[in-house]
Length: 368
Image (cartoon, rainbow, N blue to C red):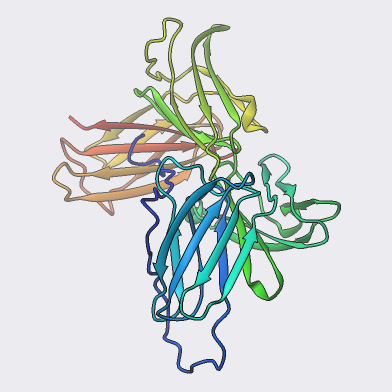
């Protein structure tokens, strides 16, 4: 995608290896008894981590719900007892029903834990996060989004909800939070004394695309099919499919025409993707970005009353200007960057348009 679009990244795991975690301070006293073995597990991740006796060796075995081994190896804890082990690429990531068993070779301590069912669904229209969790336990739900910091609308809200009959639900309207598409949500469940933490990471459903490009990215739900359609004059001109990743619900794909060839977004198409939920159908802004070199300004057309961000950068990396604002009712905007940069020939210009629910369409071009 264009450089202005935030990349959705998931860390790739290697073999079952030791990963040293950065910590803020060193332990100053030695406990009389060995530190208990703890677990931190994210469903959909290929790694598990935790804490145990400092500078110790652990045997880590991971099996699925059928008892089939997914990973096995020995790892060393760091000076503060932190450890991490990752399964080889190609092995299915952590999922409910998986069992993690750890043995400390030095102390003889053993701990095993089976990952419970923990799910999450984000509704960007109602601002409700819901899912399944062990009955009678408390789930921590965190929603955060810093993309709209320029408008003073960033947030990081943490809530605690009791799971009744195996389900939980929280309406972030109660916290004054509007979860737009692309926001991040983390669900955490803990056992007593925080010995085990199991979490899930989700991205609120959204889509990002660029004029002149065929590829798109976004999020739907874990293993959830996203079917995207572009139409003109009532007829479909391109389709695109993606499946939400199990770990973070992100998807990637390309638009293709009726012959299966790549379709390059032009602007003006009618977009539709019901999987996104609220406001899932809209007309793609044509943007038609221009740069006025004499006035050092950038103009274009985004979503009606929608947010926009502009970037101007010299071809040699020198000269940089960032503008932002809210488009008029007809979508037009002009932003003055004269106090930041002298826009010249060969400058790279980027414009990002945000829809009311957080979807993004961008355009990039160079000045002449």
